[in-house]
Image (cartoon, rainbow, N blue to C red; front, side, top):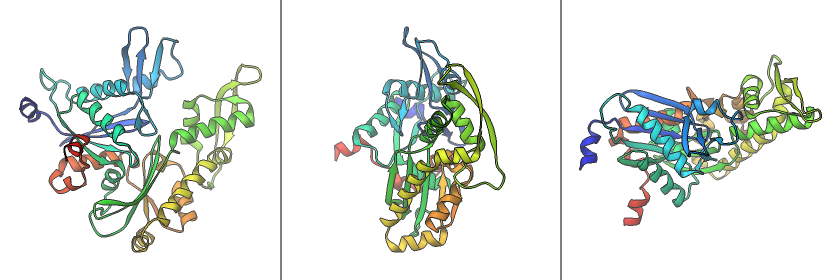
Amino acid sequence: MIDKIFGKFSRDLGIDLGTSSTLIYVKEKGIIIDEPSVVALNNKTHQILAVGKDAQRMIGKTPYYIQAITPLEKGIISDFEVTEKMLKFFINKVHQGRFGFVPRPRVVIGISLDITEVERKAVEDAVISAGAREVLLCESLIAAAIGARLPIQDPIGSMIVGLGGGTTEIGVVSLGGIVSWKSVKIAGNDLNQDIIQYVRSEFNVLLGEKVAEMAKMKIGSAFSLEEPLEMRVRGRDLISGLPKEIIVSDGQIREALSRSIRLIIDDIKATLELTPPELVADIYEKGMVLSGGGAMLRGMDQAIAKATQIPVGVADDPITATVRGTGIIVEDFENLKGIIIPSTQQESAL
């Protein structure tokens, strides 16, 4: 009863709890939180030193007793306690300065397609422990489709590919549900590792993950560019052990990324093979939509379109598509409550 009373003073939240970043939508206010999913922990005192951007700046630069942790791996909670503290920090930040107590909001949060019941319960428990009074789950890919304004409730096939930091999710949506899907453990973080491995083997230089990600963002591509690009990157020479600067081209980065991109495209084709022909006809006519940070890789849409012979578009602001979808559910809950997944508590009561 007290939670319900306090809930009247709180705003419902939509959360995209991602491997790379956490975004929070606040009812009637929009996206308030957009922070990396990173927590800096002092192993001596077990205290949280920083969360989000402040913690991300510490990656690779900490003494032995400070650890910069990413508590989610491949879209799944790998460190429950740290995830709980991170969510609590963000939820408190949303309500900062409003009242003398922390209101308990109702939260809509996206989950992976291939999540197990145990992993789903971990998400629910983490959000409740972080200060929510109620947790409502929906598939992240459905939320992304809603955020991309696809007609998911119509009897029409809509295909969406969510290119996240930890996983790539591919799904065909119709009548408010996912008809065929695949979840691939290859995504943005793996592309960073591809660049690190390529530069290591070709130049005998070891790059940091931040440098590799910067190279991917600045000159990375999945399709040939009209104008060549180059970038200076710095790392450690594996022969001398000294700092070294090299110049890499867009063609070299594209070569580094090619295998992972090819595997993602193969899974897109495999998903289409599992899709009923009536829906495939809709997709062939309407095309598919890309969401997530990976959708911003140059030429990703062109590479997929060439391989599948299907038109490919990119969602408006693809990084925020999922959290905008959870926000639309929060704002229009009565019309969209049918896509909510029963909680593990509700399922056990049946």
